[in-house]
Image 1 (tube, rainbow, N blue to C red):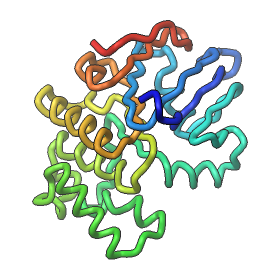
Image 2: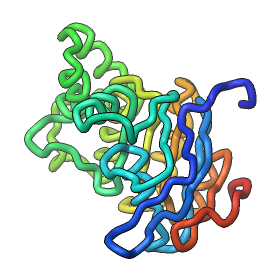
Image 3: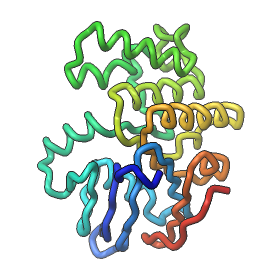
Image 4: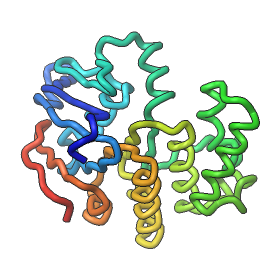
Length: 228
């Protein structure tokens, strides 16, 4: 991985909520195809950090660069556009739109980017096949199991071919068999496409698919280790 330029670079990132410091000078880089786990106790700042990287929240200091673009210098509209085009997100509770089918949920990011209908259909069908849900394309989220909903969410996160996928406890709401399936899928699909993955997790099993683990405590990275 040493020959690849960083997809993501954080330099001394700081975030406060009122007078309460939440992130205290976070610095690290992630390269294309690299999977990195953020681990640590609840309340240590992991999700806040993920939100700042994803442009959902703004850091109060330091710099976050996505492909050398400093997020702090972008307007809200430019930041939203960058998020739509370059970042995919997978959540613990799926966040699928309940009134859309599995196919329509996966297709949605491509619609937002204005992709032609034929391209949208081909890409959506390809991804549903990758996550082994072609036969459930017309099912609504309420008709799917938790594991199936998370597979749809992963397909949606990858639909627009992002450079970076952010995952917040992607197996936290699944049983062990579904979790293993989701983790294998994330590792395979990000590896094949050389997509960077930054994953918040409490699970040693989830961290094991990553190349590095960044251990957080009290808003700071205190240690970097190989996965368990």
